[in-house]
Image (cartoon, rainbow, N blue to C red; front, top):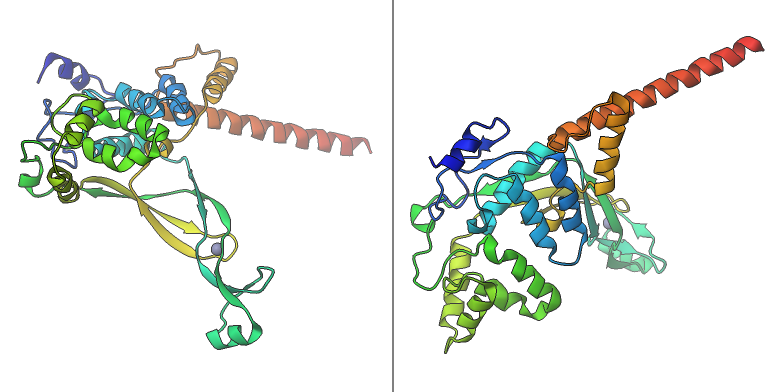
Amino acid sequence: MTTSQNAYYSDARYFDIGDMPSGGKTYDYDRFYVRQFAAEELPLLHYGMNTRVRAHEHVIRAVQMACSADLSQLTDGDLCYVMAWIRRQSFPETPLQAKYICTNMLYQDDVGNIYRDLSRKEAEIKGYVLKACGRDNVNLIKSTNIKIHTLEDESLQIVDHPEIDFARVNTLADFHELVDERPYMRYKADLARWVRKGKTLKAKLMYLDSQKDFKLWEEIEKIKVAHFHGITEEIQLRCSDCNHVKMHESTPCLLKFFADNSDKDVYNMTYNLMAQFGASPNLKMPAQMLMYHHSTLVDDRRKSEQAAKERAAQHRKGFR
Ligand SMILES: [Zn+2]
């Protein structure tokens, strides 16, 4: 164990998260410690989730602050795993918001009224046509099912190829910045992240461009599939119009993965706590503790206001 790892070893806020989905064979550290977010990291997280300028970098920085070792070495899949761990510790009860358009096919009349349980014949006689529901839904998701995909086969835990290596966090922010500006670059930039040579995404792209044929491109595509690891998240979506239920599984999006507490929320919460308890604000306070204290405080206040109202009502009655 190195000296810097020793510091995390003796800090009770940090937990060793054990084996990563990739197997962790390619990292220069053997233990990876994480803690939940502290109040002070929430504004940075919020900023990353809402800015258009290098948004991913801010979220990665916030995640980095809660980790013992350099995140830039991690593969995308391992980063997602670390993020899932931090989210579970930091925001266990915060629901997520899912926006989607319902694609359930239903019989409808000219003005879009929905008819259920009709046979095809009945629908045809009445002149109804099969159309997608099309409802714009916003679902609050209380729980998600996280699936962890690990590279069990040890030979897949490294990329045994002179020109190809895992796509890692060190090119992730540049990738998104490039693709936001030039969406048509997505496919090529995604492959370039798997090029071993070159420190920056730009250098990797140049290497890929310098190829005389598409052999390397094809090999990267195959390796990407064979070495897939990380997490996927399954959520249940229910359409509020037609009640259709569908399961949706996807790899998480960095910018939408965490609960969004704006910096104003965080400052309001600390201010309220301070005003109520006279405690000086501690931004090192775990995010979950901050939210718990605050919701308890709000709850207590609501209850005491309710009780005061009832007392006042009783009092008025007494005068009648
Ligand atoms: Zn629907």
